[in-house]
Structures are given as structure tokens and as C-alpha cells.
Image 1 (tube, helix red, strand yellow):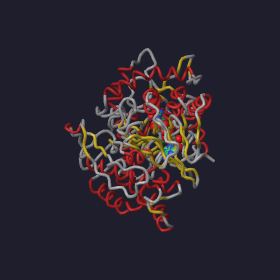
Image 2: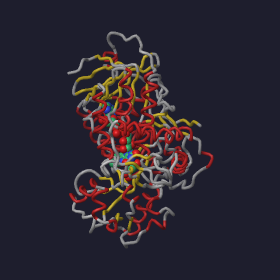
Image 3: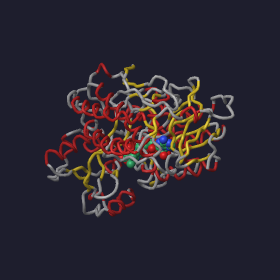
Image 4: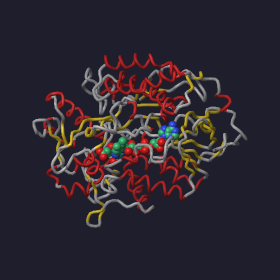
Length: 537
Ligand code: FAD
Ligand code: SIN
């Protein structure tokens, strides 16, 4: 059992690539604790398949990587942030190599894969399609060897804010509510894919960090930009399973019910067009033919496919697909949150001593759509920068004991069986609602319907739940409300945000960010006012 009040120099929420890499880089500057609400492999990193993008060949350069990232983001990203990402990428890959992490090789050289909208082969991968799993395992070992303390099954709930500064957090383990004080708190808690019914995301990815940061006074922005991945297999049992874009990068085709390779009709890059275009094309073909769309790998040869994509091959086999004989039915699913907590180039949020990194953060590198395999890279590059900035935060005079646990008590209403039941019912309804009205194709009417429904559920935010799943649902509801408001406010189509009623890009909105910031709520605040968007250049 952990003490009710504990102090560390740095607390990191999340044990994905962003949290682990930041922890390793910070470990020499003080005591580091990493919290994960489940086990240490929870989150999306473990499931990453395609790999990490970096300009690593003679034919490539950071400036080509920059242009590809910029164009994939619908020319809406922050070029300074993109420059940081692509220029520091090779150095961060060298860090991994120096840690003993090796990437797949062909003829002795690192084997670089191809993915959509990359003008060069630049995707480094491990174990074929097991990049995420291999990375998490290696980084965990490294962090442990550097003395990082890991705390599992610890659900971070609220930031402790004093005098406008973040001084720690409140978290829950089982029935116990505990406080942890720190010089700096780093949110590396991932995105929010679970707010949608159909998603590639791990069950742990419920937007908690976004909700906590908002309540602590940080700025959230660009939440209307959520990326959908086109090729996801929905097996008869179990969770949706991603079929990596790298499969199309190696030459797999998308075919409709007539056996036609239809993507050529939708985009000059065919199967390697932007994810939103490929996703909508699949939906259109499904609707037109009334039948499924499939991914065809048969011509690639079974020995190559087995070696290059061992995880995908074995999972497909489990579900009865023989990749030499069968095509795989695929459909789009919610994949990646592009917006997030607004941060500067060192991961600082609007709240002093509170940092954010990885999918939860909005650095501006992805613009309105993300280039494949830039996300793991973002965790490395900005994890390193956050570690440097957090290390420079001065240690405050710690009080012997934090009174926040007492202060928080009683501000929220204790939930009874009726509220618990309501909250339990809301989660699947919210996921359906978001999938239907805030998914790949959006309209004002659908978004307004979503807004009204969300408002009718708003009252559950006033209650204190002691079950993780119910606290997560509260967070999902808050994040969904902000996503719907942003999607309504952006009356144009840009990158992965597609409005059927405003199908064109509005050049005047190129620099506009839709943002949210709550008015100084702190630990224990009960009802949260329905979030109002504001616009920033
Ligand atoms: P995550 O890896 O999602 O980790 C989040 C962590 O936060 C977890 O440890 C979780 O337990 C913890 N957490 C969350 N809330 C709380 C809380 N309240 N309290 C305590 N802990 C909490 N990107 C690429 O660049 N290349 C790829 O090949 C690739 N493939 C992908 C394949 C799949 C199937 C998916 C879903 C995504 C893929 N992506 C890929 C995207 C990429 O994997 C993620 O964006 C990235 O891994 C996010 O890393 P992260 O560290 O920010 O968060
Ligand atoms: C994939 O392997 O298709 C996912 C890559 C990504 O999301 O960057």
C-alpha cells in the first residue's frame, strides 16, 4: 500500500512511448514516478505496427520529411514545430540504437518501409509489424535500470493546483485516494479513441489527461481533428484489429465487391493517399455496392508476408483468413487524436509546472492530419525536450503534507446506485453517438443532435465515482463535448475534419485554432460548466 501523501521530483502519467522516453531522459535529474492506470503495457504504443518515421537514408533529408508532414497536415501545421520534429528525429533514433534497440535490417542496412504520403521510404520498424511491443519492452527495462519507480493500477484523477502552479496530483488505487507532490507533472496519458464505438485504440485510451488538464486550467485545441484509419479488421469476436498501412506500402490493394482496385478513382496516390480520403472512399464503395471492401495481399507472396508482417499474419490466421488465399475485409475506425493540450516546443502547458507530451499534447506538428508513423517519433523528440524543460523546474518548499485530499472531499456529490447505473449506460450510448455524428463524415444537424444528447447527460459530471470505468466515462463525456463543439464551429473541411455541409477548405481559416480553457477549476470541483469554444490564431 502506498502512503497517502508522497513526494517525487517528477511524476509522469502514462507508460507509453512518450512517458517512458521522458522518464529515461529525466532519471538523472531526480526521483521519477510513472503512473499507469492499468498495467505498464496499457495504452496505444504497445499495439503500434508500422513503425517510426525518420529521414535515415542517403536519398532522404529532414527537409523532405518536413514537406511531407506539412502537406499531409493539409498545410495547417506549425512549421517551426515540424522542423523540430524532423531535424531531431535522426538523433532520437540514435538514442534508441545506443540503448541496444535494433531495427529490422535488410542486407545489413536498416530496412526502411513505405507508408502513405511519404515521398521516401523512411519507416523504421522492429519485429516486422511489432514495433510498439518491442519498443515498450525495451524502454521499460531501460527505465527500470535507471531507477524510475512504476506504479500500476493508479488512476490519476486531478491536478493539485496552488497559486496557479501545478504541485502534484490526486490519484486512486482501488478504494484509496492518494496525493503525490512533485516539482513537475508530465501528462503522457495518450488520446481518446475510446469515445468512438469503432476504434483501433486500447481500452485505456479514454481522454483522462485531456479532461484533467482542462479542469486544471490548461488550453485544449484542435479537437475537431481526429484521424480515422482506413484498414481495420472487425473480427467476429474481440476488438477491432489494425491492418497496418505498411501493408499497402508493400503493395497490397484495396478491392471492392466487383474485384475492382477502386482507389485509383479517388486519389492519384491510390492506396497510399491520405487516410481520410482512403477511409471515405471505402465507405462510399461499401455504400454503393452494399458489400464489404477488402485488402488483397495475395500477390505479395506468403513467405514475404509472413516474414514482414508476422503479427498481422498470425492474427488473421486465428480468425480463419489465409493471406495467400483470402482477401481481408476492412473498414475505417477511429485511430488518432490530432488535437490535444496546447503546448510550446518544450511541452509546457498554460499551467506552470504542468507539461504534456505524446498523443495527449498538441504541438502543432500534425496540422489537420497526421503523416503515418510520426506519432511514435513525436513521443521521442518531444519527450526529450520535455525532460530538459522539466529538469529546470525549481523544487518548491514542500509542505510536510498535502491537505488537498481533505479539501477535495465533499465538493462533488457522492454517487448513489442510480447515478452509477446512469453513468454505466451512458458510455456505449456516447460511443455510438460520436461514431454516428462526429465520425468520418459530419454535418451540422448530426453534430447538433450529438450536442443535445451530451447536454442531457452532463449532470453525471457533478458526482464522485469510485469505479475507474465510471470516472473514465465522465472524462469521455467532457472530451466528446469539446470535440462536438469544435467540429460544429469549424464550418469547412480540412484534413481529417470533413463536413458534408461545408465540403471545401476555407482559406481564411487556415490559421484558426478552436480552443477551450476552463476558468480556474481545481481539485475537487464538482459540476463543470459546459465548455465554450474560443478562437485563436
Ligand atoms: P499511450 O501509448 O496511449 O499510453 C498512454 C498511457 O497513459 C498508458 O500507460 C495508460 O495506462 C496511461 N493513462 C491514461 N490515462 C491515465 C490515468 N488517468 N491515470 C494513469 N495512467 C493513465 N504511430 C506511429 O507513429 N507508428 C505506428 O506504427 C503506429 N501504429 C499504431 C497502431 C495502433 C493499433 C494504434 C492504436 C496506434 C498506432 N500509432 C502509431 C499511434 C501511436 O501508437 C500512438 O499515438 C502513441 O503510441 C501514443 O503514445 P503515448 O505515449 O502518447 O500514449
Ligand atoms: C499503421 O501501421 O498503419 C499505423 C501507423 C500510424 O498510425 O502512424
